[in-house]
Length: 75
Image: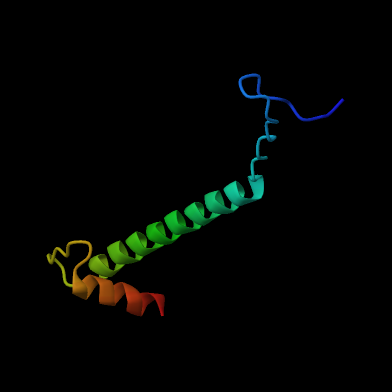
């Protein structure tokens, strides 16, 4: 007897289902964690750069000056 299941409608053998790739899923989850952590660190550096900057100046996230300040702070 064969280990293949047979489709009752047409008599052709069914292929086994693909196994889940847990390593790929874990890697994607880890990459997402790293991206989130980097974004958090950039926001933290941005807040620190704005706090250290001129008092009373409000810089919106994404401003060229604040982005440059963050990049300089990161080295």
